[in-house]
Structure formats: structure tokens, C-alpha cells
Image (cartoon, rainbow, N blue to C red; front, side):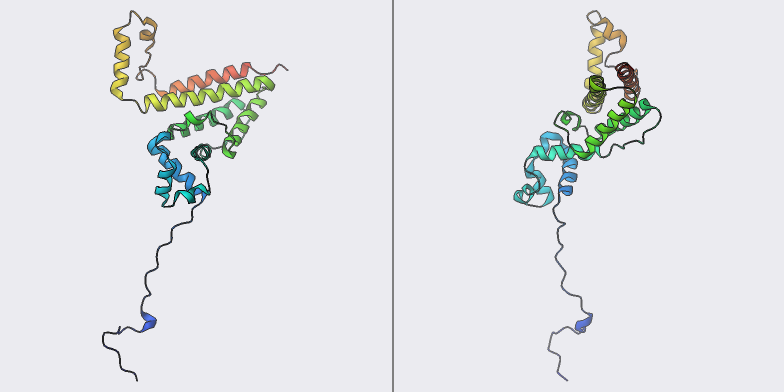
Length: 233
């Protein structure tokens, strides 16, 4: 029997734990880049998103990042399409106007959760999530009797409404200083002689009607306008 060397471990080699393995980083994928980009955009907005910051947060080199995306614009396009994926595509029902309401309400909700997104909608929107929801919107309008130019007009009416409403709400009601909003209302009231209609209508008074009611009433008006663009039978 060989004598045990001084200072050698007394636990049999078979029972001793091996050296800790270095933790391997998850592989860099386009999905990880886009998910993190959405997080950064939610935190810092479009201006705060940089390729350098993305690379740092992903713990990769900029070179590795550029294997997947070439420019910041690529990232923005992918991020917008990613959040559109959170808008459920409804199952088409018998009432085309209700189908549109369901889609547009969900669209607004996503835009408000990601307030950087509405201002990017003007970019070419060719992502699969955006196209799928635009396809549903137009198919509902076609079922409602819109075709050709009338279909294009109705589509734009609805898209511009939800984008504009979401952008206004996100930047004013959700982001602006409440003190500034109150000061704006006080300014109109103090100058009622110059702005009698604005004062009487409660312009900028967000205590009179809440955002949801204003959005729903506006959506009804837009859908009625879209219905009037229907192609004559």
C-alpha cells in the first residue's frame, strides 16, 4: 500500500467535486438583441438606444452585434414589429366594425405600453407582425364593403387615428408634468375672452372626460366615417 502524501486530500478522488465550470454566456441571437432593444427603448426612448449600449448590455463586442444587425434603423424596425406581436389578431366575427374595434383597442394598449413606438410607425412597416395585423384590418374593411381607393382611405383613417391618439396620450397625459398640464388649463381659463370656445369645452381638462372615453368616442366616429367610404353596391 502506498503511503498517503502529506497534505493530500483524504476524500477519495471519486467523491471529490471537480473544479467549478466557467458559466457560459447564452449565444447571441437576433431574438435576444431585439428583446433587449425593446427593454432599452422602454427605459430610454429612441434617442437613448445606441448600438454601443446594446453591445454592452448583451456583454458582446460591437463586431458580434453587427453580424446580426447592420444599423440602428434595423434594430428599430425589428423592435416595432416585435411589440406589434403583442397585439392579438382577433378571430373574424359577423360584425366587421367590432372586429376593428377589438384590434384597434389592443393596438392602442401596446402603443401606450411602449410610448416610443408610435413615432416610428411612419417608417416602412414590412415586418410579419405588422403586416398580419394590417391584413386583418383591411380584410375587415373589405367585409364592410370598402374597396379600391375607399379601402385605402379607410385604412389610413383608422391607422392615423390610433397612432395619433396613442402618441398624444403617451407624450401628454402619460409623460408631461401634471403641474404643466394644470398650468395650461389655467392659462386658457385666465384668457377666456381670447379663447371662449376652448374654455367652455374644457380643452386640455383631462378631469372632464378620461382618455378611454375620448378614445372610444373617437374610434366610433372614425368607424362611421370609414363606413361612409364603402363602395356602392
